[in-house]
Length: 374
Ligand SMILES: [Zn+2]
Image (cartoon, rainbow, N blue to C red; front, top):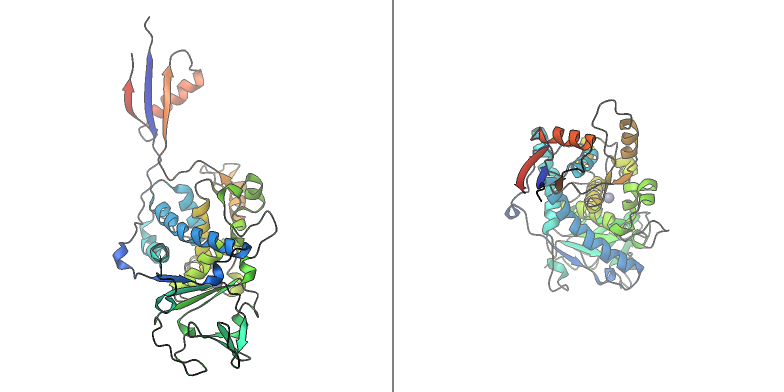
């Protein structure tokens, strides 16, 4: 008995997007090292939040680089544009993209100091000691109270305003950079042997302690569900340790070139980052943290796509959803999709034949790459 069974594999081509941005050669970056203090490696909720956050903070930098360089990942490019106001395929934005991405590229190259005791040779030092402060009479903590305005970090040779310590501020974390370095401590010890370009990140207990469900310090993609995606969206990520750590690492890697802009009151959170102009976004650490968040969410969740058709009734509603940071579940666009369609006679409907004829007529949509049968 003769029958026709032609199996046709077709590739639905994503409309070609030129990715102008390409990663920089690794050799062009300084190799930076980090040290993690024992206070971050505790067996409690804060320690678990730190471990989870550190892992995802470093991992997200690789994901940001990979997705931005992808020619298919239009969802991530749209997310990136909403935060940084830059278009991945626009040659006019190429230089700005390089400037923005160099911080993620440096983050991706960070390596841990071995042996871990070698604090003095680390570029970036991370502490989770919640900064207890002792006095010069009995200096038994990292921070020592010098006067009503100033504390000194006797391990890292830094002087920090008292108002910017965990004890006296509402901050979740704080990064001391070049302007805080000192060469001599109150007791006359000098910074001999210390890395000249050292940076110190202090994560406060309030930035790592558990949050009320459904919020969480620990990022886990499986925790994101449609309820959280609508009620909180990307704002959910703001509470994660990963977000906090990327934020502080951006201050540290850039020596405060990336700050809290335009001012600390308007720098944090999606409601500030989303409407921010390009010049502020470029230099705002929290904007970078949201880019990293987007990369962590990207395999499953992204901002609501805005209707491409002008006058589409959903466009206004979708724009409103995206502004609010609401997330939706779409198929991962970072890889081209192959779809197999079997041509079996007798199963077609009028409509399926019409759709097929339409697609096959235009190589922009469908390319027949293999045909077999009879
Ligand atoms: Zn900050």
